[in-house]
Amino acid sequence: MTTPSGPGTTIVTARSGRRVSLDRTTRETTISLALDLDGTGRSEIATGIGFYDHLLGSLAHHGLFDLEIRATGDLHVDEHHTVEDVALVLGSAFAATLGDRAGIARFGDARVPMDEALAGAVVDIGGRPYAVIDLPFRGERAGQLPLQLVEHALEAFARTAGATLHVSGVGRNDHHLAEAAFKALGRALRAACAPDPRRTGVASTKGSLG
Image 1 (cartoon, rainbow, N blue to C red):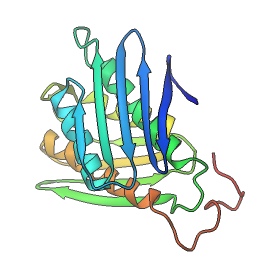
Image 2: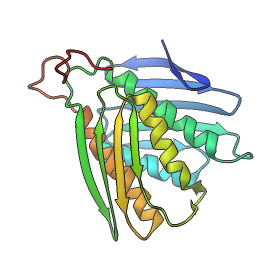
Image 3: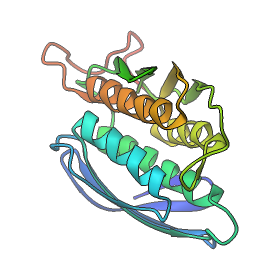
Image 4: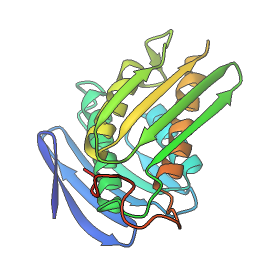
């Protein structure tokens, strides 16, 4: 099975329940990713961009997703391709694990403070890709991560996950603001992906999602 995701093709190499492994190779990046929606928050992430690893690890920890990512990219050019492609594959992993999205809550929201920063995420994983991001960073970088790529990563994730994201926040410290946003997104996704014991079929009056 393959899932299109931009100029490369993401290949689902293994699937079991709500666990999936994927690979994606282009002339710009090579990515291997494994996701377990029903994990404990364990993560092993190496993208070559330390602060990006930190943000993705925070998302996994607070979403209680087990997440493994190994990525190599053309960082001699800049960080753009690696950040975008990892987000595309992560979104594809969520889409693959959710399948027809039957029996899940579908919607989730969370707000997370981190010292002076406060961020919120509201998500709908019903198959409609859209992203509204309002994270007013003050600087250009946090560690090795250009902060303008945070919005781009979230947009890329939404596109392949089939998710609507509204992520916003305020704060004076860019590290705190970005980290609070990814923690909030992790918690919102956790709520949206959770099985709803009262739900039969999909959470839509149309009878289908996507």
